[in-house]
Amino acid sequence: MNDSTIESPHIQTVSIRVTQLKEAKTFYTEVIGLKILAESEDELKLGAGGRVLLQIYTGASSKKLAGKAGLYHFALLVPAREDLGSVLHHLMEVHAPLQGGADHIFSEAIYLNDPDGNGIEIYCDRPKDQWQVQEDGSLPLASDPLDAEELLKIRNQWQGLPDQTVIGHIHLHVANIKEAFHFYHQLLGFQVKIRLGNQALFLAADEYHHHIGLNTWAGEGVPPNPAEAAGMRECVFHVNEEREILQLAMRLKGDGYSYSLTSHDLKVVDPSGNHLRFTLKGQY
Figure 1 (cartoon, rainbow, N blue to C red):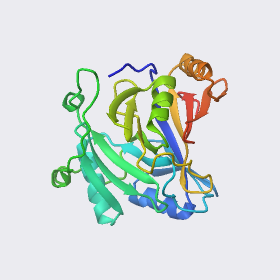
Figure 2: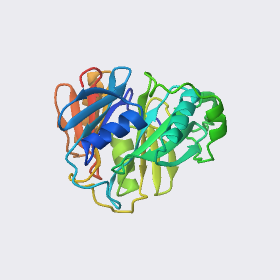
Figure 3: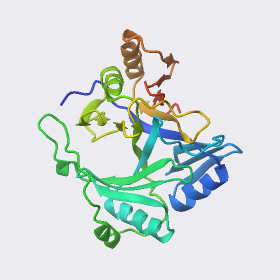
Figure 4: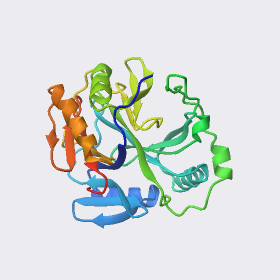
């Protein structure tokens, strides 16, 4: 379909706003299975294997609002189907507010919301030789029923999310797919893997199925999510080399797009108000 001009970025952390930090702490540790790595009166750092994956900030005065750009879901990637089976069994045992599950051919996924309406996906990837990659590098768009029965049969013993869990991707509501395509593909350099007309776009670096999903399912032309509402504060990508950050800055500058650059990171806000940061691996 096209080539990626961005090389190494992978998502390091996602930060979100919530209305009640205590409630979020209980949910993300006891229901989702993340571990507390640091804690203060207004912030939680949660993760797996000693790595921070999710930062949670208090201060939201309302739950997530409909009809706004912003977080659709962030996605926690577990290493194997047996792990996803243990997640599913645990979520059923604690009566978690499951939204559903799906088989996307390249991955299998479970969906739910936190108490403030922030969307969460927990998924595992299939081996790459099963992804049905097309000749142009694109992938099929599928949302088949999840084989929950098989996952439950092969499940591991639940001990929280595995240490190898990472943030696999984010999926965002945007105001306009054409604008989003220009920003994420032509400026940031992510490769388009799946496109659904003017409704949705899935992009990746390094031949993954997607690191970023974008959609207009909240409505065309929706405004940014307000800072006082629950939602995503920032998504942090890490890159391996400083030159990658400088190349991003050059493309943004050439387009007249505003950004903030320091010696080790670049901050930018997409056309729909979603905050992104690109930082050198190990600097954040």
